Length: 336
Image (cartoon, rainbow, N blue to C red; front, side, top):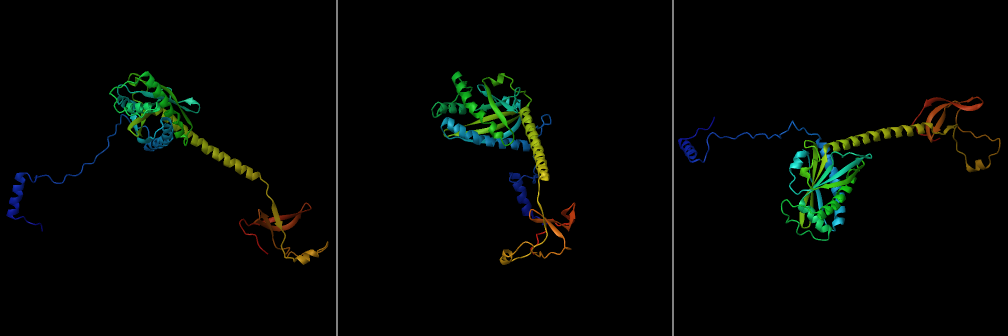
C-alpha cells in the first residue's frame, strides 16, 4: 500500500515549491540519443580500414622522417600522427590563410606519374617552418613564435623552404614499402595557393595531420592526399597482392612437377638374419645363408627406408620382379 503524506508534509512541499527549491512537473527526463550527422550529398569514399591503413603508413613515415630531420637540423624533434580525416578539398583550402605556402609533390607508381592533375600537397605552420629554417642556418629558432599574422616568406626563405620540404618528400615512399613500391618527388612550392586551382574543390582528399615538437617550439604539418591518387595506390596494392597469389600457385605447381619427375630408389628386401663375425670370416663361395624368410611370405618394398608396398617374388623377362599385392604406407620397417 502506498504511503500517505501527512498534512504537515504536504504543507512543507507546497512551501518549497513556492520558494523555488522544488520545480514541479519535472521528473527525470530520458537521455536523448546523440546521432552523428551524415551528409548524403558527400558520401565517404574510403572505409575505416583504409583510413586505418593510411594512419599506419604515416606512423611509419614519422619514424623515418624523424631521424632525417634530427640529422638535418642537429636537434631533437618529436613527430607523431595526430589525425587522419577524409574531407573535400574546399574544406582544406578554406582553412588556409594569407601568406600560407603549399609544397607540391608527385607520386610515381610502376614508372608512371599518378598525380599530374592532382598533386600531393604539404602544408607547414608558418612559425614551425621559420623555426626549422633558423635551425638549418645554425640558429636556435628562438624568435619563430613571434610571427605576425599574414607573414610572407622572402625569396631566400622560399629557397630554404624548398630544401627542407625536399627532405620530407624524399623519404615518403619508404613508408609504403610494406604494401607497394612508390616514389615521391618534389615538384615546386606554391606561395599563393588560394589563387591557384591545384585540386578540384569537390574532390575527396585525405588529410594527415602530423605534430612536430622541438625543444622551444611546436607546430603542425598537413599532408593532403588526393582521392584519385589514393584510389590508384589501393588498386596497385590489390593488383600486386593478386599477382603474388598467382606467383605462389605457379611456383607450387612447378615444384610439384619437379617432384613428380624425380627418381626414387625402390629396395626389395628378401629377408634378414643374424650371423656371427666368426661365421662371416669362414664364408666361402658356394656357402648358403638361410635368410629365415619363407618363399610363401610376401616381399616388402622400401622407399626412403620406409615400407610402401608388399608383394610376391617372381620373374619377368628373365629378371627378378615383385608383383605388388598390398600398400603399406607409414608402416614401420620390421625388425627381424
